Amino acid sequence: MKLRHNYYPSTLWFLLAIFSANAHASFDLDPSCGNLNNNYLGKPTDYRTAPTEQRNLVERRHFNVEHAQIQKGRSTFKHGENSGSLMGGFDYTLRVFPNHHLALQDIDRLGLMLKSEKPLNASYTLECYYKRAVAFVPDDAVVRLLYGLYLNRRGKTQEALEQLRFADENSPDDTNVQYNLGLAYFQLKEYEKAREYAKRAYDRGFPLPGLKNMLIKAGKWD
Image (tube, rainbow, N blue to C red; front, side):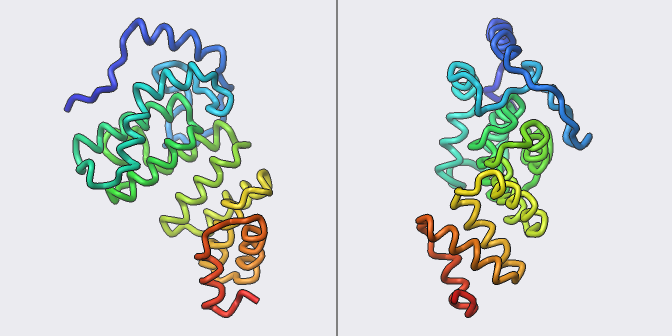
């Protein structure tokens, strides 16, 4: 199978030059999830602070098309070469930018679509990509939210709470975090906490009524 993610010497040297200025120090990481410095460009870069030129250079070749395909849903690819091409792009993007938020969202969706925790051309299990992001930028609250959502969708609600709590502590006005914390607590039948976080989210204008309806049905809203 031939993927479109080819690496040309002239591009590689140019990338090395601009990425080296933004390299992070190494962090401890589960050995099963590889080394953070194992991408084609040396050390990874924090996506939040990466220059626009640097982002565009990677995303044009390895992310934009793949992201668009994921947004269209399952009908646009099959389990095989097409899905492998998608994962190849996300893998490259996440080795350069471990905390690329949209790429982390997309691998979650891809895994659910394919019912696979290691799609074709993934260098690691899907959870490893989240662990790598946390190890690289432990202060990124969005990464913690996305990791929490990933865990909760796979039935690991107690583990998800740890990530969601961190996200809430570091981004206390984020209604997405509050809503999803409420959902997690509801799933654990901790209804008082579920209601607390639901009301925090709704008081700040969160639009989805699902959690409120669940609490009403359970007789736990008021």
